[in-house]
Length: 108
Image (cartoon, rainbow, N blue to C red; front, side, top):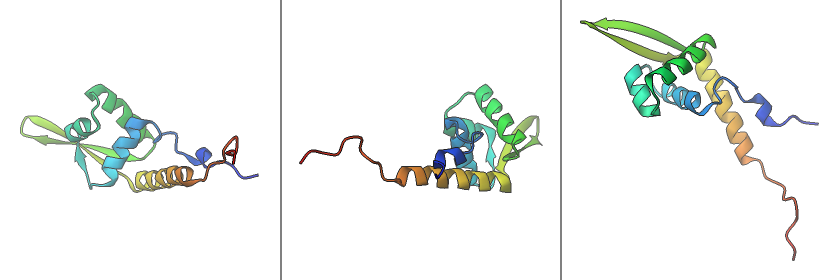
């Protein structure tokens, strides 16, 4: 018996907000906190919580830089994070492309 591909989905990435964050970070070298917040359309506090989860998993790095009196927070995907996102996306695509079997075949 084969195991359904859903068992290979990454539970850290799977939530919609974290998936969106990882998709964004996979396409750039780094992104500024406010840009990610505005693009993903979540609050500062929600983004911070998701970033903490992703950072603990080793999927992103968070760097702060001082620009005058202002601190800028930069976010980057790690190699492990990019690999995890690629695997997660491949699994979603595999699930989406599997042919379904109708419960009741159509009547001629």
